[in-house]
Length: 271
Ligand SMILES: Nc1ncnc2c1ncn2[C@@H]1O[C@H](COP(=O)(O)OP(=O)(O)OP(=O)(O)O)[C@@H](O)[C@H]1O
Ligand SMILES: [Mg+2]
Image (cartoon, rainbow, N blue to C red; front, top):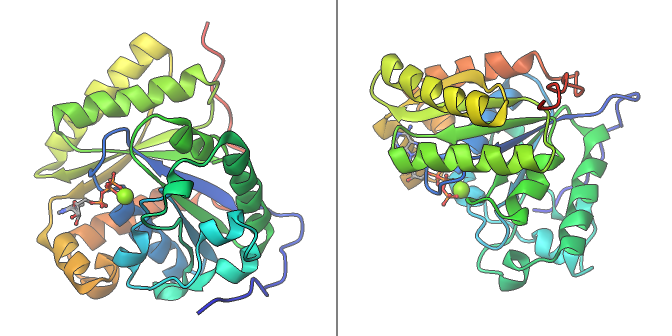
């Protein structure tokens, strides 16, 4: 069901945009994005999730909705932005990036710039915007991270995932990104495992890029996450008592302080 952004704009205040990214694919970005959005919404923040994994969007599956329109309709001029906003779980508003749409996957700079402007136009109507990006370090990923106030970097303890997480930070920093990047280590078996991964990554970004990564937290390996995918619903909604849901709440508590303040202090330029 398409829904209008009929809520009044907040006076001069803009939403805080969080972009969830990773470098490596399959590390849990979408699952985290959908559940972060739900948790923000449950806490009373008006939240929109934008599936920015253009052409291979699948957040709607994890959110349990069937979008009738997507960003593809917006880009083709078939729909206004307000027409492609769907009602998601936990009162989250949802915008899909289109699945199996070659034109969206191959969108040019101009098309992505239009989308970035459109996302910014959502800002006065909500408190939080979550952008679920695709994998990789292409412009199709970094353009979306570059409009965010905060990036959330997801990795697992897999060596390739850590290397790719470093890779996306490197590309972002080289492109001039200077806002906070908060690290989430997913699918860990212990807090110590997460801490080791984070310290390794942080050490590399500090040493080689002069960039200071923030610790946000961890999500444990939890069968509830996969179980929720099978139910086509966010794990924090169908398994609210799960360990993953408990850790998710901690992540949102860590991010809530930035909501309402979309001007993070930029890091000093690398000398
Ligand atoms: N903490 C977790 N415990 C168990 N399974 C998990 C956890 N996090 C993610 N998964 C599983 O990992 C798989 C990949 O998750 P997801 O689709 O969110 O990754 P992604 O980074 O968005 O992938 P892509 O790069 O393809 O977009 C899913 O099957 C998901 O259920
Ligand atoms: Mg994904």
